[in-house]
Length: 251
Image (cartoon, rainbow, N blue to C red; front, side, top):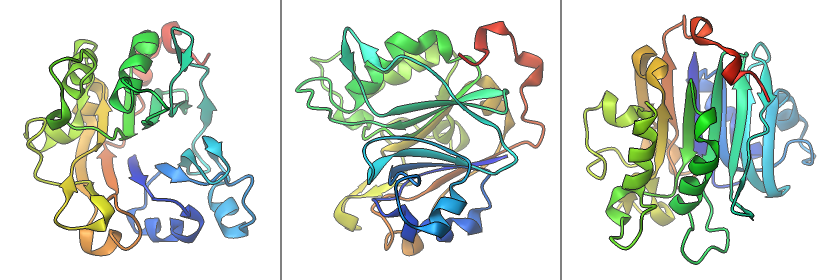
């Protein structure tokens, strides 16, 4: 199974065909439009099997899967102490594992924007993260940590590690958080402004099954978006069927 995540920087209807070279089974796309509300036949056909959420029909986050894959949107809480956090889209894949698509947002939060939104989401959904893949645009890196906060990027990494979920990029390339050598974002498409803010985190099953991981070629993808796509290829027998139990049944 191959899974791709990419912040397409809008107008996915004009870009999705370029993703075919990856031959991914599942695409997790940030800043994409709602295929149900867009009058674009080819895009709607490509997105036939999908889940999507967003603030408007033109900007949201979607999970797009091959027709052979069963997608079930999960009813996880997106509220922390009465306040809604965004954007987080949890789905069940083939009744085998949970996939959480992430596009963190400022969300008019003066203190808990971006990585703070993910920190809050983890607090209310931690029990759901068994056998999970968490991926997308986190809009964060450890070098933006602040001593006065307890919801820094480093805190989120520690929270996930406590429940067995770790960054596949850092394990695959044996790099430390904050010392990434492969940028995923070039701010304003400027090659002099590289950042690593897109991630794929997975539980032990995904860590053990990962065969190959790639970051897209900047020479090809920068003309489509300021972000580069990330792909993860997992062993063919990644079904996790032997780990299923009632605690992770669709809700």
